[in-house]
Length: 410
Image (cartoon, rainbow, N blue to C red; front, side, top):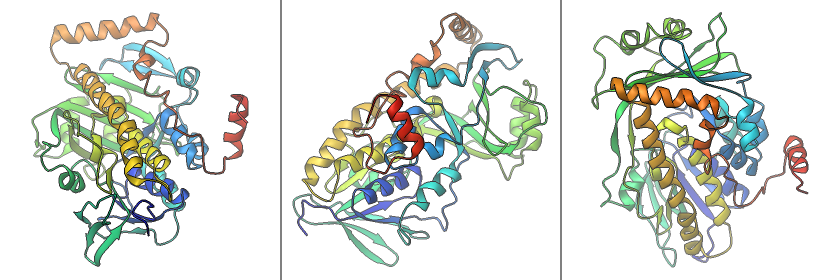
């Protein structure tokens, strides 16, 4: 096989970014192998909000409308204080009017299952830890990935192995890596409380809470608070959350009642405040948190991983110059993701303010946004309005085809 014509891609990691890349590369004609350390595809995490940019990316692999049908947020929502006062109100149609698509919250397992189901049988090898031992050279040798069952040679390796990426460390050993962002986060999925509520994010002093509905009737809730790195509650995370959030407005106490230590996930938040010099070296490329870990303040971590997978496959096909393709991928993704990492950090610092004066100013400015419709959504200008470099190379679904015709496209 010519070194310029990639035929076999090995994807290390079966998270949302890795599976999106695997599916997109498969649809571009590459043979794909996905290596996953865990024994199964049960994803670590709870909910993920898919913004319009990710929905359009998923259109490329034929999954956009499948996800759109899972939209559960209908009607009003917004930002509140711990006592329940609304700082800003919006509704679910605002994003559609501004960006052409809704915000869709799904369980990560739902998205993982949808992506995996479209890959050929035996593409994904679970229980298979992998180590990059040779990044390869685009004008010569293949990349090599070591597994317990032996070494794999690959024309392309995709490092989708998360925030503590071993592939990133192998490619860029001189890079300092991730940095603690100064706060920790909790996530949980519970049954919906009996009394209705409007979806919301609530900002306190040095801590936030969010409550969002899922299509299946459950609730995805998340919280974040300033805390020392590595700190854990000696009497359990539910007890910690009760101390912090039990006095907050409905439905926070009811959600905490339904949560258990077994269902609560806690993790310190890290990000890459120093960008990588590139998102590839040799025949190996990075996507998702491995390339650009970011704070969750804009909800773009998973969305950018989906974008990565689609853009990578756009540039890399079974024919053409692999070196030029990977350089084009870096040129597309590095500036965009670096900007979003930095913007996410700025928004996180705003939501984590704890001083009385600073919180008062923040809440006052948020309240003023009520009188400027669309002001809050402007935060996502240049992010949620992104479109893939090509519209689709998967067969469009009827819903997607109708929407394209409404937009004036053939």
